[in-house]
Image (cartoon, rainbow, N blue to C red; front, side):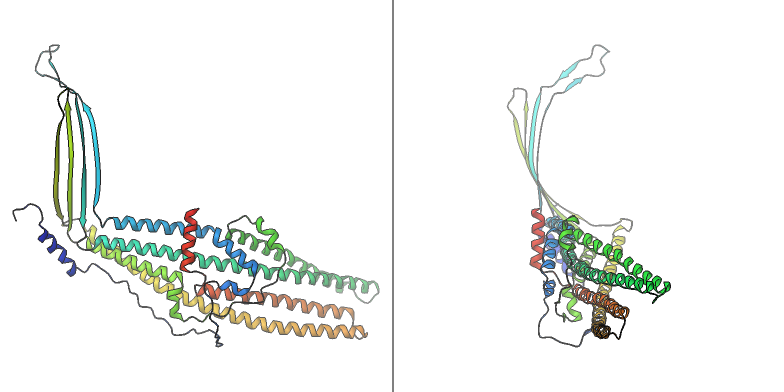
Length: 487
């Protein structure tokens, strides 16, 4: 070939090698998905669960308000949204390598030279002074690396997969945030309900102690009975600071989740409220549906896609690279008072480079990216197993809490019946006042246990929706990103 540049026919011939160069790597990971849940309830409902806004099923206006504030101001969501913007910008950076680059340059200056003739005795040298010269030049330079074997395309695919993964990270942060707000709110209401029951129990214990003291003065009781009652009262009173502390911590946690100081919520949340009487219906997704709904699984899949694309790009480094270049410019030179001299230049060129020896760097990079692909593939499988575990555990927790709540409700009703019977006997003089107080105390203790079980039922339902990946939509995520960008 006499032409020192690569001809178009040569370029096309090199490009045809793409079809026979296996640089692209598959990103499909086979998962062993069960066909049904092991611990799902057998009851079926015709109503479809709302995964997008599941918390509204509690029918609690204050909970809805807290979640709206959290979605607007939570710092974890802001960080995740910023990561999405960063990843999207890096996609543009990666895709820019697929196109030619064009640079403009401009330079200018003034030069005056003074030369001394050598070989003349000291002090008798002759200086030659050249006229002052003004020079200016400018031009354009273009460069384009032809992506013969898909290296740049695969790098762009990897960046796009990473950007998609950052979007799923935002989804995951949103799912976790909603569950945390709902869980802390429900636990706060449960604690407040228990504090109210405990206060009634303390009042009852004090009344019993006063009655015991009166019986002691009348000679109908002894000091041991009084000491036992005083011990019971003090132990009951000691539980109150613990519950109060737990309630304060839950309010403080909600403040962090809502992105505002805790004192802003003290007045609103310190008012004692009841647990929501309603709850969202049981979701009925299949195990395979988790792959599309859970953000952490979607994120793990994007990591596999990014690693596969990176491995293909690393393999492409084994093959030649073709670069086309072009440059052109104009220069002007003015010396003294003479007219300026101008000229223009241009250059066209192409280059082909191929690796020959690099001390194993390329092969080592391929081995590293291949190991990275194995890591993320194994992590994808593990994440799916963890997702199945989350759902099964949530089913078990909900069933267990529901059974406990039902039995404790029945026991509380029996204790209420016993209290009324003892009180009726006391009114007829057939029972002592201490027996009435004891029956009432037993009822309050069962009420406290029932309140804990009801709280566990509600929290388990939240955990179930979190395990199913409920609480995010594409539209809401985009709005969150746009709002974060505006801020």
